[in-house]
Length: 82
Image (tube, rainbow, N blue to C red):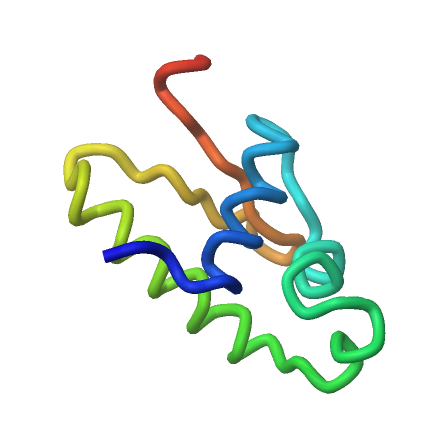
């Protein structure tokens, strides 16, 4: 099935910064927008990342595309571009 809008936005911002760490706050603003980002919890972002990881794993279970940068945010590691 296709990605949800928030999943697509998450993947898009990570793809635009491929191989670079993107802060949690930057991701929240990109996914939920500037005005709504104030009410988004870390748990909501973690749940979104988990759902996107599950979707990516369904296509390629051998490679962990979304990497957690502890205390900062996330990074997309795409083996095609590494």
